[in-house]
Length: 323
Image (cartoon, rainbow, N blue to C red; front, side, top):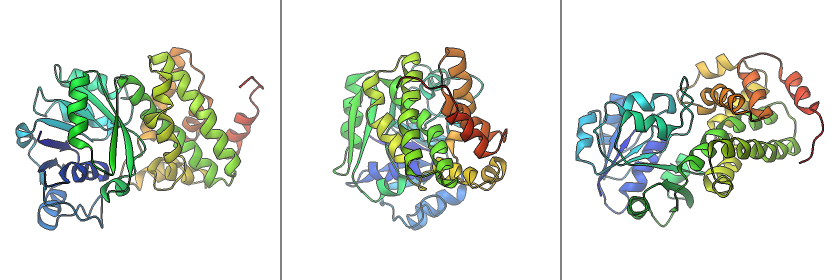
C-alpha cells in the first residue's frame, strides 16, 4: 500500500517518516515550495520539523495530482482548511484524517466535512497523544485508528505500525474525533493556569473536570465512553495539558501571562487548533444543552472579554454540585 500524506507541517512530516520506515516510499504533499525543496534536497523539513533527518523514502511534491499514484491518503492539514484542500485531492481513495478540530460555520466533525468534500471515499481517523518530534525520532507512541470498515482499518494499521508506533483499532470514529478536538481547547485552559501561576492542583482539576466536559459533549454526539477514556481522549488530553511542546498549552500560557490572544496568534507560524475550535465547540455545546464551563472560560479569554483573574474567579464561584 503506497501512502500519500497531505500536509507537510510537523505532524504530517512525522507521519511520513513513520510510514517510510523500512524502506517504503511515501509521497508528502506540501503547500510551500521551500518545504518541497528542503525535503527532496536535504532530507529535512527545516521549516516545521528542524533537526530531524528524514528517510530517503520520503519524497515531497507540490503537485496534488501526483497523489493519484497513492493507495491511501493521510490528511494532515489545518482543520479549517481540510474541506477546501480535499476538494482538490484525488477522488475515491481511503482517507485517514489526522487533523483535530470542528469546522467553523458548519459545526461538522472532520469526518463529516471530508465526506462532503470527497463523497464515496472511505474515511478513518488517526488520533492520540502524539508530539511530532517524538514520533519522528521513533520514540514509543500509541494511537487510536478509528474506521467504520474493520477490514480497511486492519489493512491501514498493518501498513503504518512500527515497533515504536502502535495503532489500536476502533470503530468509533465520532469518539476519536471528539476527544482530539475538545482536548485542544482544554489544553489552552491548562496553559492559562500555568501562565497565571495557579499551581499544579489547579491543572489537575482542569484536566479532570475538562474530561467530564468532554464526556458530556461526546455523549451528546454519540461517542462511546470507552473511546473517550482511551488514547484519543484522556491520553491525548493528559499529554496536551502538560507541556509547552503543545501549541495549545503554550498559547494558553501566554494568555495566563497577560498577552492578548490576537498578539499571540499573529506571531505563530504553526496553528493552535484549539483557538479556532473553541467558539465552534461552545456554540455546539449550547445548542445541544451541554454544560461546558471550562470551554466557555477559554472562549472568554480568547475573545478578551475579561482579565484572567476575573474569569478564574467566575469559574470558582460556580454553585457547588455533586461530582
